[in-house]
Length: 513
Image (cartoon, rainbow, N blue to C red; front, top):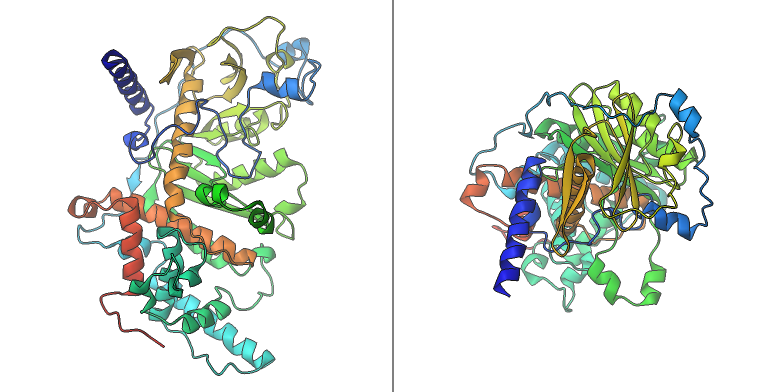
């Protein structure tokens, strides 16, 4: 038993050193707990099937593949004419042109609210006050006066944000549970505002009270100014590392709730009408940029029925501010394509993506690398073909996995370290993909600690509260990288609790009516 423990520890130390060499934060061994899966290639999204990683051999068996290549792929002779060869050459990515980390130094006395207000400052909250009051006035002019209403103040708006944010800290399904007598009641914060007053603010709450005469994203006009502000603040407060990932974060129901609720409750849940993609730093988990589009409506992206075309456009939007920096981007099957990666390489953006013959645009790729051969493959065995600096890798590990990359040299080898089966040989690009994507998947577990449980019916409000969740996540990351963390070492949960108290200004607990 002791020998097994020593072996497991040595494997863990080996994994730690490999992760560090790939610029992976050692926090992956900290708060997130056990591996989510024995396979390093698994989904990073709750309900999306766009990045559901499955061995290609299993895919073809499930869908009755006859061995023919996917649409747009090249025959052997066509591939040779296009420059694909089995002769490998070394590929070197130029040094990263920036240093990563917080863009400004926060004092050791900075509070949780100070970090949060880097993204949601006082002028943003004051705008919510103004727009909410404007909407309430217009609503009552049209539908009759509301005798219980009085204009909301900035202090009340902060408290309103604090009450809703508390649903992430205390994991309660409804924000109104705070004033109930049930399990999720919270008298310590309920005294700060009456339930009647909270419901009044909730009824009239708005970011943009009236539809603009023109705009680029009419479907999200009630939230777009806030998203623009949030995006600007993300860019101004943090510089991400060289390695980043494009994916859909876990934004659906808490897994614990899903496993405990009844089938009837699940059926009652409305499917969200929007998709949210992010560009995320793989060294820290900081979400650098978000892209929201409606699944139906008039936001432009919804009119694209071709998923690779849609996801390619999303990827370009997410990467528009990182050209010329020698960034390495990791992508799932729905984004990975030769044409996109080639376009990115002209902007000094390097890529490493997982390929799927069903979900990826395989145009311009050799067929013989995309279909499973009749000869059984050995675990850890790989084949590589190159075109210029672009490598197409086929690697076997209980199924065929294929990667397209110009970010890692095909001549360099790596290893996948599994606690049960030990080391599995692989190209360095495969190890890097597994390490970075595994960290992001683990990070979803941490990020979910700030997932706001309040479930509004309106899509713009769903996007707003999800954005607030992301802002809190980023605020904690900046806090943990600051001098303030050395003074009071708050955990994620403690930071969230502290933020709620500061938003509610609980030093003065005199209740409002």
